[in-house]
Length: 87
Image (cartoon, rainbow, N blue to C red; front, side, top):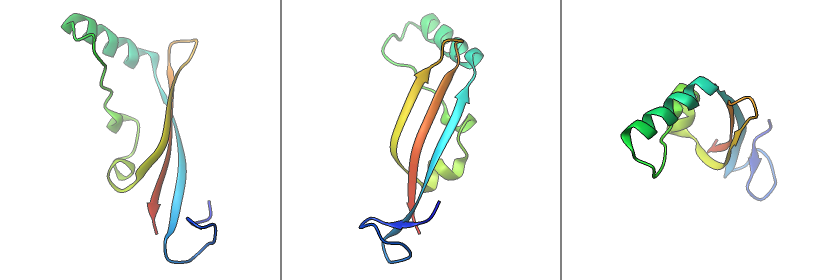
């Protein structure tokens, strides 16, 4: 993907690099998280450690612009992240 300036140009000050990350989260992971949540009786929200699915570089150095979390019919989930960082 070519770096692009926020104003639409390339290779100038203010240029950013963007990436689209697509990760599958196995149904076993989701099942275990939901079982743990039910056992603890939290009922408010479920936290998923992204470190197992997204490289630490993206969690530390990149800004998340957008994300989706889609449950699949077979029980797994699809996590997509649009990230960017300045060049």
